[in-house]
Length: 303
Image 1 (cartoon, rainbow, N blue to C red):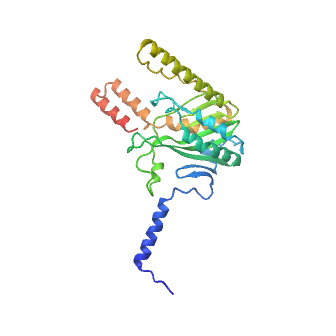
Image 2: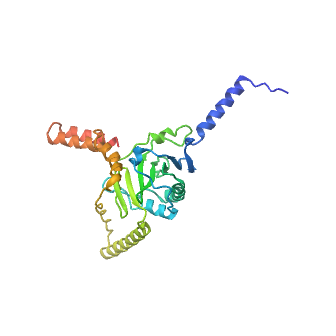
Image 3: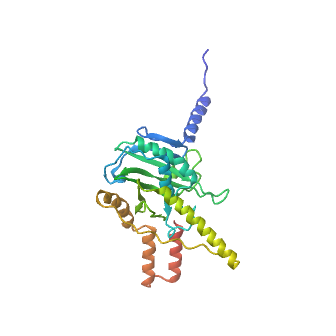
């Protein structure tokens, strides 16, 4: 018995298929090897790019345990001079959810990677301001191993996502996420080579650093409470320590630095460049104080 479909039935069927496709998370290219994928958070192997590696040879595959990866990522901190955070936990690039989700897949990816592959990762750090207004941040980039170090080149570093990216067909909002003016604060075993490039020594004991940090935090809290009990009023938190000195790697790794620093230095439209130019105009008395304040507010509001 032949079933005759009406034109309206066919149209509804096509619409249903389209809606289903749009509702699915963005699929990885066929050439990628997916290690982990959970909606918007992913780890996969992709073809290497000289724009990411600077053309250096990659020492992969490389066995790095999940616990080691966890401790490496856990020591990444924002520079508090650029961004104000409420507490020490906020200053961490990856929260507990991100560390738990990414550590094992990244370890697996390094073990499976060839010298022609990069480890691509994407993670959304969910940090709602309130129940309605969200402040979700996108962290996306590439990892690779070279000369005993794990390099991370960020494509999006704590980028602010505008709009409801979780709605069907709105994944493009992740690509449109805007980077904010942040950088990483160099820690032991690390080298911050640019705003979006950092290396971590595989041989360094990051676990010991985390244990020492936890102990120092506990001691500081006890000391603060002791002072408050003595004087009877709350004691303000101590200012963050000055960032450790930064030193760039020698040899082939300098190629990596050029890719990151040249772009920011040569960009006359960056927030820093625009603010410097505005200060210069005011100093030369080419604009009034009122014009200066209005333009400065406009620049800062655009971040």
